[in-house]
Image 1 (cartoon, chains in turn yellow, brown):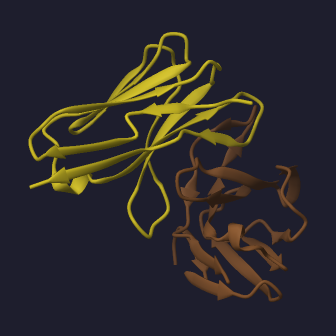
Image 2: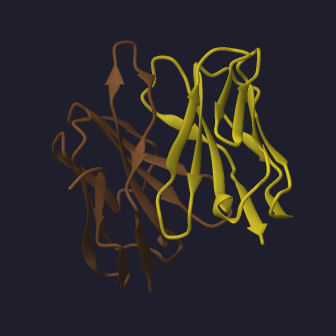
Length: 111
Length: 116
């Protein structure tokens, strides 16, 4: 069974702070995605990374895929209250049409 | 309408009731999914349909019965549920191409189900 462990589980910070969320597995994935979910809504795709070592930037968010394609990180610079939500990583394996989701990191950014 | 639409948004049902959840996607995707999201647990895959054919049933109890009449619609029929089935049920769709590399899901807003 493929498992994706995220850390930390919970993070409460002030506006303007930086943070990093980690997503780790013992399995290799062909691609890895990050989603953000707000209360009462479904997850929304933020980014897909497909190449080992790949780094993608989305405004203040930086995503990295590990060289061995087993782990990933999400770094947020100068967090804003609008970044509050549940962050989920999800891994896909070649030949499968399903994603395995991580355990989630709940982020609260206070003014 | 665009995206993935789920109805109803909220559902309260007794253990002897029969109800159905509906999902509709307007994205032209060729795969659809049902996931269960419970508190303190990762999203659990329940069913996968690709080109209207069920390709995965992830050891889900028979009291959950999916139906995919066409590539745009997905249903989850519920009967004789248990209180532990209370959760957020999410539908998603995606476009699966070639060697099935997954290009990301579009999720609906979910149905919050409470079994009493």
